[in-house]
Image (cartoon, rainbow, N blue to C red; front, side, top):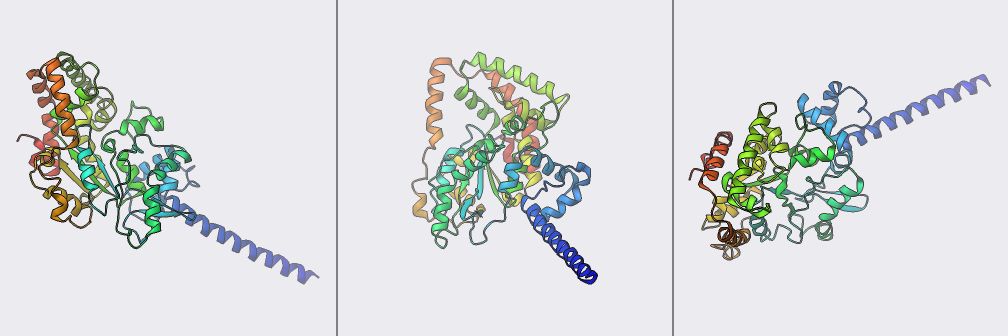
Length: 397
């Protein structure tokens, strides 16, 4: 009898160990899927660096791991749900959620208001490999959700593409879908507000960190315009008082605020938090503050930076073909490019109409305002040109 009890206890002990081992294994898989472990969140942040590196299966610096921790803290639904292993049979990042195919963007097209993202977007949609039955700007990151329903709304944005891909896995396997939200470049202040982060300090992470967390191989395209011209167009499009004198007064005020901000905070913080909130939004056009963050996270071969001036005034379509090459899709036949050549851009036509009405009503921009803006942006243009090793971003020609 005692021998039977001993055997029973031994069997129970072995079974318990096996169950615990299975639980540990499946839980480890779950943690890997989430990329940042919920179960170790209670540990001190300094102790998490190595564990986060192991879970994400990529080398991480201490600063990177802190970013992961903060993103998981503020947006667990986004990181936990969208960080997936993508289906290898598709060029576009898609994954299975239950029996349902869900997709994320293959590429992001960003810029700033009045930089030409709309025209470039619709020309990209001319390519048969770029899915065109989709709204350009979902502004997911600008309105980043903290709930299941918010993330579901973003996934639903690409649902038509996902159904098409899953319904025609061979014909659609090489097709891609994009997110054309211009705010992807610069609207990091909105992510700060959503997270409830106090803006007296530095921004702990930006859009680039979020996108890299869920899709580290994403392609990112930015189109940038001469900062002075962009600021002027932005003001006359969005401001209620469109007079040149009012514009000049606001520029003087915003430059003073910006310079005062720099005495106690970084350029990144001032450009994002202070500089992009009120018209005229000077911080949006301090491009170096934004571009530097993207190239901190993504390798250079995944980020393409264009100039509006090259796009708008290029008489041939080589630039568009360069974008297709960057996206790793075949070039368009010459016959498909004919309607694009020497065509006025969509927003260019609208801008001409608006500018003409403004000139008739308010007169031209004061020369001293343009001079003030040129002088303000000059050092940041120089930083950008040096950083990108491209003098075109000085905007001197």
